[in-house]
Length: 176
Image (cartoon, rainbow, N blue to C red):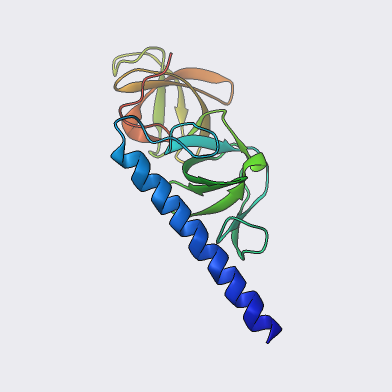
């Protein structure tokens, strides 16, 4: 009987969390402004990075929820799609996601290189000089972003790459 009560309470908590997140998202979509997280008042969705070398990804927003997997790559860019208390729902570039405690995330922006042999150029132009060649899967620190290009730093090199070959920045995003 105890296990049934525990299961029932856990299910009730999960349903309440989903309803709260759905209701909040619907209310924000109905407003004229950008969607803002109920906890941080920051835009949702937004990109963040993993602030730890290891982070449990849970099925729901509490320690009692099952761990689905563990992220093991420090500075990995993640898209934050929901907030609930001290928990943040994130997804990776493959769309896999779950709930992570907010202390394991950072606002420092990073991106993931999607294309093999991506040239890092000295200016945001296909004719710019190549400063370095980045392999797919490299994590780079994000700098300025123009409509089509972003400035990146990786492995001691700095340069510009097209937005179309990186993951971790919104297509319409501009950064100074």
